[in-house]
Length: 362
Image 1 (cartoon, rainbow, N blue to C red):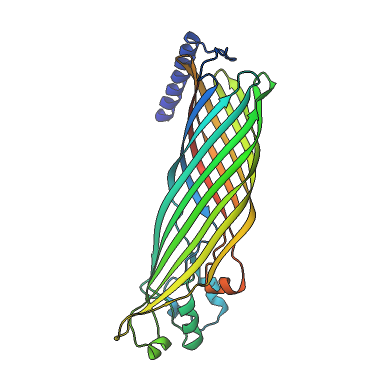
Image 2: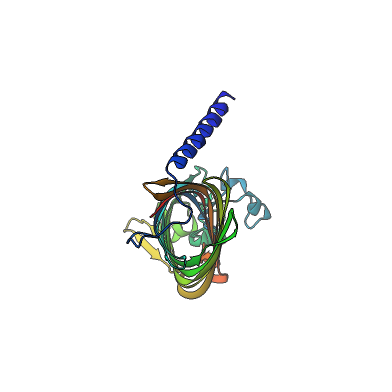
């Protein structure tokens, strides 16, 4: 309780101090342009603390306690015991930088923004009772199950997922006042995106029985490399809204969308490695290796709390808020041999989290 009171008092002191400073260094609401080079220019920088959630990323199926607890295959009870293993989707940092210019005569706003969010995430699952089924690369598992059940399971699965997200946005809009304390800025523009994903999967100590009778090699390992690259460009549209509820304090929100014409490349390359006495044997299969051109939609939304002040006769804005970006049908790489042969796998992509914004307007 004492800590809460301290926070409230500190916040109240900050508001009063900022109000006193603003009153002493008043900045006009409507700037009188003097024809300088920087008049109307705005530079912004955002810190992004986001989480990436990608559907259809399961790389293994785990039966806790080991496969020996399941009597026969196939059996309905297996589906109930299997637990799909996905990357952990940990939170990470990124950034956005922007450059805006407002014309002096008509108040049209032109903006250019670059968003970058890259991450490399490693995850693993282990079971000493060989309860991990190589869901992402079930070639060995299918052979072993059909011939001499049960087999084809491993003791450990490792995933290394690399995610690279870059977007460029060019926007043209104009702010208009609905009332004294409410402003709306509709805009149109062009959006370009590059979303590159690569996942490397490794299964160690795969159990084999029937294959050993043909190739007496131990141990056997299974690896998989899944690639999903997306390049797109298209029209964007949206609107931002700012409500001034107190002097120099605003509540902002925005909603935008885009339809991108994309070129995608997705591949799934499982590799099986056996080490018999005569030397290693490697079997590599391209289950899926395709290129496609499609229209892909996306949606962007945010809400934030803003504070503005004046510094050396220039306006400074600081805000903190929540942002969400949603991309439909981003993951098109099959997650198993069965998917690659009989169905098309699709997975939506969502990035969301905390956005801290700072800008200076000249």
